Length: 130
Image (tube, rainbow, N blue to C red; front, side, top):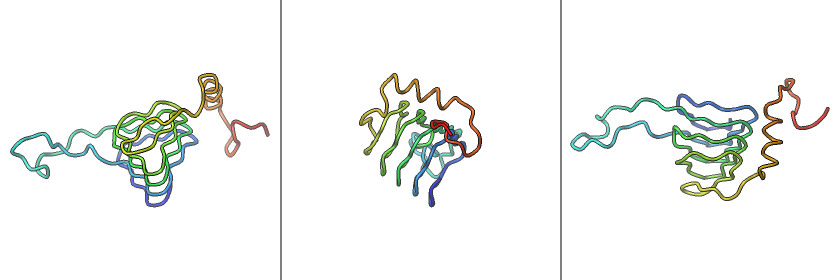
């Protein structure tokens, strides 16, 4: 996790994932749909879980809205605002974030998933023979 990053409670981060500097996982922490009640007095909804899969890269300054799921192998571009779930191996960017392309084709995804499922020795890179 990079410096100056802010995570809300209940964030699950998978193996080999990296969060760059200034990443924020925020939001969905106020009720705002009650007419006649100021937001500050409206209470808080139940906390939701944010899932960041294995081998995910979240770029500098990206914002993830609490409760989203980032699939295995996805890349979130610098400065992106993620408001919806990101499919596995998608590369997303923009405000709001959208899929730009995919990191691997289906065959490569299967190979990569098999590598991620292998137990590894501490410090060993699972994709390269020693």
